[in-house]
Image 1 (cartoon, helix red, strand yellow):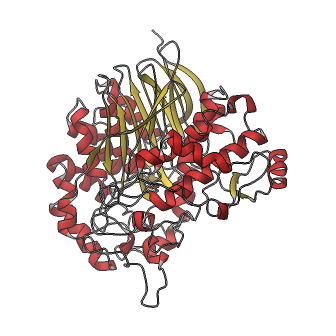
Image 2 (spheres, rainbow, N blue to C red; image 1 turned 60 degrees about the horizontal axis):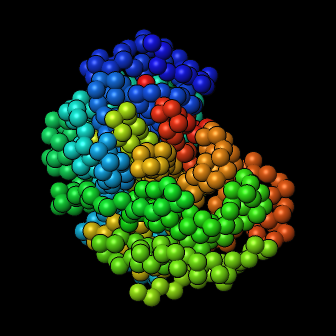
Image 3 (spheres, rainbow, N blue to C red; image 1 turned 90 degrees about the horizontal axis):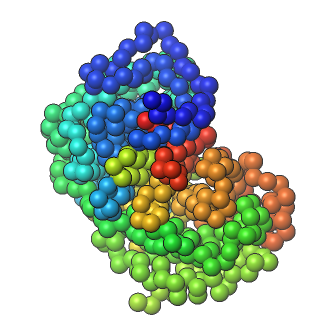
Length: 573
Ligand code: GLY
């Protein structure tokens, strides 16, 4: 029986000199030396969409083996840590949002934490100057990684033994995989930083340069993964791996200690939920601003009949821009790790507050950001994070966004352990009013404190219709993440666009400060002209994020669409 309809197959077939080996130890049939990128698929048993074709294929193979969507998500995340080193990771953190087959909604926070020796002014020079170089580059930029703790915390919802889920990643690291042209270019652009931020030269350094078709073998990483397979989370947070991390810290002036590693715990959180025109939208709570920002933005447009305005109409773009501006002003003032700072979530998401917030909205012209203060509550362009969406036929839907922050994080690879460390400390407000790498500012709510989690924008989201999964969505993109999810959902729910159009069409972004609308290169000229006449400053920039969507069709089949802004790939079964 033909179970799968392949609707589009992008013609990226990679060949290398290596013989095509099957991934034997894991028992799954993937050829890491010759694979294709598929942008859309419709399937009936399950689907995985991620930033890398090999990671998506690993997830599907796990589903075929009898795993559920959580098993597939764990295996996909581990595979991304090997095949997508710019954002897939062991040395970073992320958020897991799921709707389980029994209807339960769960989320797990495995965001990095400030090390125990961090403090509010750790990036301030004696003369008061904020050192963003230190919060963004090298050893001192790293928070305590949460990724491995997150994988084990989510495993309680899985069916297969962890050892089976990690084996494909071990094989990919040990035997290698063929890199694409995009990956070769990315690694070549990294060479100077790798030499600058590492004293133990990592495997990613290649003096003659990388080219498409080269095989990347990561023996140290394979050994780290084996220690995790054999010892569980302790294989990372204790023993040899912890020793290698602490030694790396000592070589480069970092401050993560054995205690920081041993004490790291992933945290189950109640997902952030709200209703929008009969849909239930489920996302991540603090320390991600994503769930609440999406809530605020969707609710500020809910009663304004945006559907009738039309996609990329000046009216709709202007309304969404003003909504984004207002939500991001609140982000800067009020949002941070709720374990450390009382975030007024209920008030910021209340209908009364959001109505009040829109009282200054003028559909004829821009409201300058200087006129938009955070509401009164009584009571660099390289944004490497990665998202993947997974679904199975048992009703489990998983939305995970994970990150190192910048592309390749701090660009420091743990000597002997083979993985990049994050530069997530820059997501704190290192000094009030000083922009981070995304231009976002913050204050007390997101100030640094030992053991605190830095505010995130990651927005892994599940939309439920009649309490069943309808859309599973997320994207990388730093502070642009919530606005990208906002736009893609508005495209699908209000403008009734096809999933491909909803994902591929040009995006825009406003974040209060800087007071400008960032637009993608192919954003339509007449809309630009009209917005400029209304007083908006527009700034063209590189592509925004890589959105991975699964939509459940009326016939119950899964439509998975991978963003066309990268090598992202959809797989189904
Ligand atoms: N590092 C990007 C984010 O967490 O928002």
